[in-house]
Length: 427
Image (cartoon, rainbow, N blue to C red; front, side, top):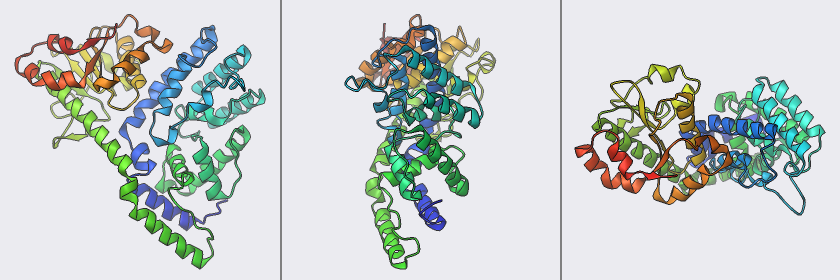
C-alpha cells in the first residue's frame, strides 16, 4: 500500500518518537491529554440532550457544541483549528445543522449512537447513515469529536493528516468526503498494525505522525529504490535532526507549562497539610517530580470510600488537588489548576465531584489559574452547558494571591477561612 517502503517508514517513526518537538512528545505523551476524554464525552452528552429536547438553539456561538469543540481545538498542535468546520458560514449557509431542525436532530442521533456503541462496525454504520443524509458542510471534521469517544477506532482528521497520509501512501484522499475518510481510516489501521511496536492502539499516535509528515516536518524519500535519492533523503533527515533543538522550542514551552502546573499543585498540597487536611493529588500526576520529590509525597493513596463508589470516581481521581477532612472523610475543597489547559475540562471535573458525590466540597470548588485567565473562567461559566453549576459556588483563585499569601497562611492559618479570603467570587 505504502509508496514509502517499510524500512523508511520505520526510520521516520523512530526519529519522530525521539524528536522533542514532534507531536508524539508534545501532545500524545502529554499527561493532560487524557483528562480531556471524559470532559469532552460529558460535553457531547449535553449537546445530545439539548438537541433531543429542543433547547439547542439555532446558533453555534454560545452553544454547548461550541463549548465542546473549543475544548478539542485547545488541544496542542494537531487539533488547532478544529472549530473552523463548525463555525457558521452565513453566505454558504453551512454547516446546515443550525437552521435545519431535521439535520440538527440527525447530528444528535448520530452522536448518541456513537456515544453508546462499543464496536467499530457500529460506528462505521452510523457514519454511512449520516453521510446518506448529505447535510451540507457536515463532513469528516466530525471525526475529531468521535476520536475522543473511540480513540482506538476513529483517527482524527484535518488537512495536514490527509496531506501526510497521501504523501506516505500515494493515495488521493480528499477533504470533505466521508467515503474518502473511511478509506483513509482503513489505510491508517493497516499502517498502525504494521508498525504497532512504534505506535499505539490509540490512533492519536499515528495521526500525530501523519500530521507532522503533512506539515513537512519530516521529508519523505523521493525514490525508494533509487540509491542516489535515498542518500539525499538520509542527508535531509540528518539536517532535520540537527534542527530538532530549534523546532523543539514549542516542547520546551509545554514542559515549562507542565512545570508551573505541578508547582501550583505543590503549593496547594503544602497549604492543605498546613491547614490540617489530608491531601489527594490527581492520579495521573502523583509521580510528577517537583523540587526533587513526587507530588504525592505525604498524600493519600485512596479517595474516601464514599467517593470511590460514586459514579464519577474515575474523573474525580483526576482532579488536581483535593483537601479531605481527617475527622469525617469529607472533601472540603477541590482545586482545578488551569495554567494553559481548557477551563471547560476543569469545570466538568468539579461538577462530577459536586453532583456525583453530594455533600463533598459543597462550598469549596476552586478554579486556580493565572490572573489573566479570570475573564475566560467567567465566560465559560456563563455557557449553557454549565447551567447545572448555577447553585454551586465556584470561586476563582488567582496565582498572584496564592503566591503572595501562601507562606502566611501556612504559618498562621486554620481551616478553610484563609483560602476563602483570597479567592474571588464568580457569582
